[in-house]
Amino acid sequence: MTERDPRNRTGRSPLLRGLAAAVLAAGMLVASAGAGHGTGAATPAPGAQFTPLTAAVMTHPTPFVATDGKTHLSYELLTTSSLPSSTPLRLDRVDVRDARTHRVIGSLRGRALAEAANPVGDPLPGADGYTPAPPAPTPTVIQGSQKWIIWLDLVLGRGQPVPQVLEHHLSGAVLAPSGPSSFEETVQATRTADTPPLNLSPPVRPGTWYSSESCCGNTHHRRGLAPVNGRFDVPQRFGIDWYRVGERGQAWEGDPTRLSSYLSYRHPVVASAGGRVVEVQDGLPDNPPPITPPVPPIENTVGNHVTVQVAPGRYLLYAHLKPGSLRVREGDRVEAGQVLGLIGNSGYSSTPHLHFSVMTTPEFFPTDSPPFTFRHFRVLGQVEPRLWDDNLGRQPTGVLPITRSPYAGPHRARYPLDREVLRF
Image (cartoon, rainbow, N blue to C red):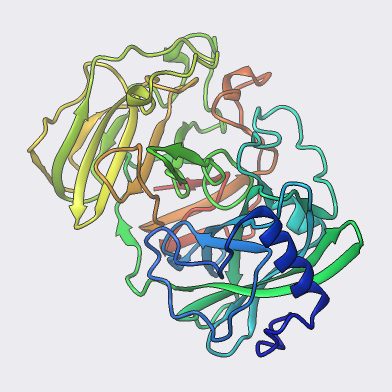
């Protein structure tokens, strides 16, 4: 049965017969995908059908405008095969559509789909920052009973309206022993957020800064799936690691094994918005650069940090601060521009930088990561090759290979894209 034939519920379709047999053989009852994790899912399309894949959206998709001047929607689709482990399926295409008009606003297939989908337990390809990710297998084959995540990054053209409700159309084939049987399903109707992202002041003093691990590519922020307290979250989806850059484009100079060689180290961290301090952690030592430290206990992941509540359900995280440098306590009221502490290298950090993000809870684990924008900044250039924060100090020199950016110039109420060099 396909989406185009919702009334066929009598078993006449080969797919329906095969899927129903597989479901019954596994002793399972399969229904269309339900609501995601607090996504405000809309009413599903009428017409019941067995679906080889179930799906859930992991966040409330929130549109934001980036430095390319376009509106982005970046979120995840968590899919699970409802078939027995002996029956794989081939996912050929994922279309994200306007649920009202059914117009496609984003599509993944072939190599693009393969590179945007992976089993939830697999490590992120190329995450060491040194070795390019190997080509993903094509076509995308999902084993029966397996759970996969599809990383969706939709870019709407200038002036293109944001749909109020998104729907996800999946198509492919069940690879049964008797031969492939095609399927189509429309799942997970999800409302987009109508509240704009927080528009913030910079979290650092004026100067030139490198926005590392920003959305929306293959970074450990964007694709950092965290299983915490029995559920998945992406707590760093829109987090940015900020590195101070000197006049020659250098992030460090001298001996990269010394903290003081990094221009970011001991640089003031300031409040991006006024609010109330709800969490403070201090006393963790700075790590010696540029060696990746052992994974710390979960409560020490972000190191010394300050968390400020600036709105209902919105918290700003300032992380990896220098021990003994924090200037606020829990319960304090802070104003935008007020110094909170100094950049350090505490927690799970290899070279000094400020990790900054917006969270939906006071704590980093578990939390969700909504987008945000900065009131004004100027893009100076970009860094093409992937430089991760845990190998920045292992480069031959500390000078970033900054090249011209197509988005150079002033920006207002925009989100900086990954590897941009900008001036606050």
